[in-house]
Image (cartoon, rainbow, N blue to C red; front, top):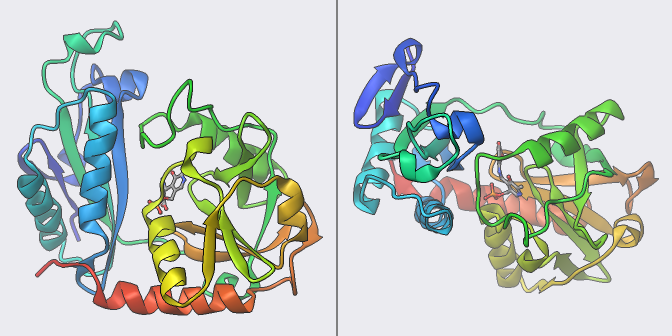
Length: 291
Ligand code: PXG
């Protein structure tokens, strides 16, 4: 089936969905994006994604040419055009066409691109067995240089970390902040369970405020689990009872081993299992209807 892509007011077949080589999103990574999921005919946390993309855009002085209502409608229409009920949606707002210099003032109009596709998921057994991860040497860019709360098109920091993990035969790497505190995965936030409490790094250390992270914090509180945003070092990863990553693509995925050290029983622990179950129930009934 032909895939339809939204670019600046038009729906184009994938083969014709092209942007200029002068687009500063391509030349400089100047732009912002969102990764959004639809489950069972509903877009999960759409309003939160819309708020975050506007926050990211404002932080880099990028004007989105659509209103919030228009953008919401275009996202839903992209899903309808592609007849999708369960999907991964990539929303990109790039600085648009300029000249070869990096001055964003030379780019009169930003571009909005919406791609919707089927999702490629981690195999289901990993949600029971857990991932094996390593702490990588590539540190997260400090917020004083680039605030990670801006979900920008600059992902080289994360890609370098991913390559480091891949080189060690691992699917995911955990990045530390400049000061050596546990920050996040390359496209996921991180949580640990220690002495019955759920801990996750605070956003100010320089991580993305993940929408899945927020949803998990809310779900855990509802379940009566104590949650704290607190800094911790890799020692916590090696000594905690449970660990998991959260992200739009991965949802909640248990971590079984960090740096070759087994966490808890070396598989999804009871708190992780409970949160996975609650999260999945939540995604099936919550969200903005597509049809
Ligand atoms: N940290 C970083 C650095 C991210 O890029 C997350 C955390 C999790 O945020 P959400 O809002 O998704 O809970 C991200 C997510 C994917 C994918 O396929 C996700 C991201 C980027 C590219 C792909 O899940 N960012």
